Each structure stands twice: as structure tokens, then as C-alpha cells.
Amino acid sequence: PAAAKKNIMASGYDPKKSRVSDDTLADFFRSQLTGDLQEIPGIGPAAAKCLAAGEDDDKITNSFQLIGKFLMLKGPDSDDHKVESVEHMEKFWYYLQERGVKAHRSAIVNAIAEKMNTMMPGIYDADAYDSD
Image 1: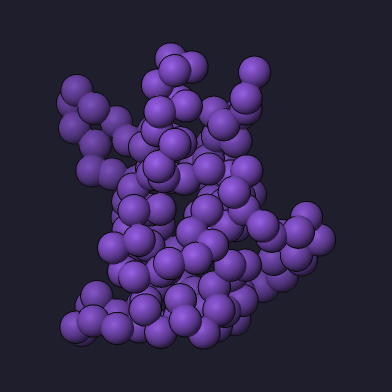
Image 2: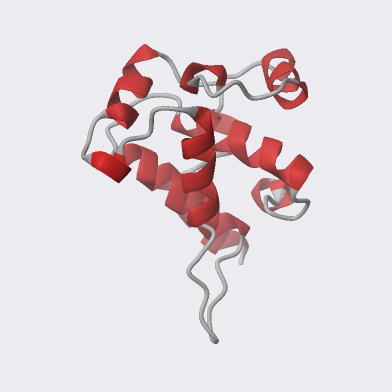
């Protein structure tokens, strides 16, 4: 399991790659969402532009939509497979990559995952990324 964990993190989401300061994250966790995409740590003008590109329902123009996409990627579950935390974070990281977000993907995933975990405990398992 530890080897598999390390393998997954080699190319995708790694919370240790987040360059967001603890203070910035703490401010984000405490603050009320306004809808501005750039209120999410790691999202700047370039990432916001990438997310807003696309057709109709593919456009992500506010923080609520991006959080909604994060939550949608928690599935789909089936009888023999449930999307757990590590797979969920990977799916979101690769979604951001597919949308053209080139920088700070781990920071964005971490910020949203941690904020959602305060509302829905258990949706994000930070312990899955400990390097023992």
C-alpha cells in the first residue's frame, strides 16, 4: 500500500507541492465564499481564464462551480468500487490539468479539499499522504 501511495503521488496530487502558506489557507478556511474564483488559494488570473474557457456547462466562472465539480468527482460509485479520498484528489488534480491549469494544482486541490472537509468531515484524508 505504501508503494502504491507513493506511485500515485509521483505524477498527480501531492499536498507537499502546495506552496500556499498556512496563514493563507487558514484565512481561506475561515472566510465566507464570495464566488470569486481567485479567492481559492492557488488560482490566479491565468487559471481563472482556463477554467472559464469552454462551452456552456463546462465553463467554471465562480468558486461555487469549482467546488461543485470537486464534489461531483467524488463518484461515481458502484457496487464493487467506491471513490475514496486518494482517488478523488487525483481525479480533481487531473481535471484541473485537463482544463489547462498549469500551476498550483496541488495547492488548489488541497485548499478546496481541506475547506470541504470542515463541512463534510471525511471527504479528505490528509493522513493518506503522510510519508512514514
